[in-house]
Length: 578
Ligand code: ADP
Ligand code: MG
Image 1 (cartoon, rainbow, N blue to C red):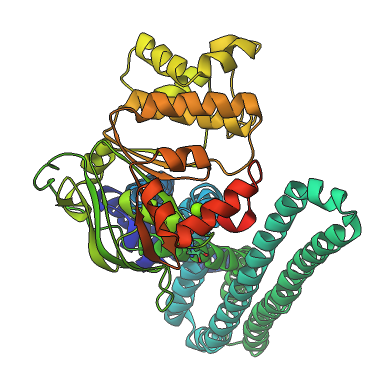
Image 2 (cartoon, rainbow, N blue to C red; image 1 turned 180 degrees about the vertical axis):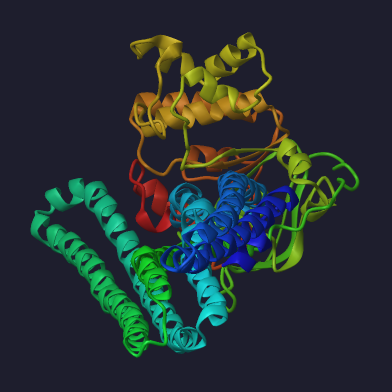
């Protein structure tokens, strides 16, 4: 654990950890020396010349003072290492996560990251001061006493030495048991948390289909599993803890028996025995507690492993400086192959030119890869082979900043921050003036939403934008894009049926955004599709037809069939064409 801490710490924090360990070690050794000094002190007191005790007491005082200095210094260093750890881990995670492909951020990962930066880092940062210190002290001090015992009574020291392997073994065993159970407990807690969320989120469906009993059953099962895992954690730790305490008691009993035997035989002085008893009383408890703490150290180690796993995810390679600036805003995919998992291709050789200042509509069955194409343009992921070019430049040659300055995203899953609408629009361009923010909001007809809100512009929209409807959230996202004013806009049209009023507003907002820009639209509405300069029909990861609406209709292929079907069912959205 100590080695792993050094692995993640930056230099100043590592220096603090070294300082803490040195102070800790020196303090523990001095403490051991002080305890052993009890033997000569007691010997002198019991012996014929009690006055000699003064000299030994003076030495004892000096040693204790040294111990106090070391103790204080290492305690302070320990706390500061803890804050250093928290700072380095947060920075390392923050810096790393900022360079990860956007596609990495699934809901599950984001949840895990939140857990890790909160509770995980907290567990790790407590390690130096709260865990390592007591454990190291609990073991080093008795070891020093045993070593020094050789000076006074070799037989007693040998008896103590013999018990050490048993203690060490029991300690390790306890730790391993706890770490294993901790893994299982953690997994069960994550599962139960997920089920509770799911249960809450699926209430409307469960109730509508009168499946409340089934819903309960899955949640129940997860909660029972969590309780069982918690119990298992305890049950698995208990034998370890109990046996560790037993081994400790046994060890001290052996030493005490040897001691008594020697005293009765007249070959060991009372002073040695008293020193031994003091030691037993003073250290049995801390050593027993050390087993608990050892388990906690293992758990902190588990948290550290999870941090290391996140840090090991390779970031998207990014050039230090942007290469040539994009010459215009044309987007081009050249023979792009891509899959989320090896062996499962999603795009199989897509070539598509999205002309500058024109609208290209992507249509195709659900799962054909439309969303994937827009994600590759915004470099959520890198292509497997082929390339994505913007203004003739491969997106991999652009820095994230340069790439993002070219693109606005209007996707379906709009996330709003729990702040005012105005601040949410301003996300599009943080340094925009108030009048610019209002103008963009007006163009996207966000001002109408504001009019109906109780506190107008100052109304907070709630976590994720809960106070707004889906169509309204999309209008805010369009306002952001208008404010950002990037030359390329990627749009995933809303599939959920909007009420007519919202539909018209979203339509107005989009037309305010789409004039004079390069547009790639995943189009679901016939109106958008028919108006596109170019329509690409995607099927199973390939572009099967490309052309204008009237051309494709005349060709009488896939698109013509789709159009006929959709026109017949006007007003209905066919599930297979989402
Ligand atoms: P469309 O937008 O046309 O409905 P997508 O591009 O969303 O299609 O998905 C294409 C295929 O890729 C589907 O089979 C889908 O299951 C899969 N897919 C989409 N996103 C992911 C992801 N993040 N991880 C793994 N597979 C994915
Ligand atoms: Mg999609």
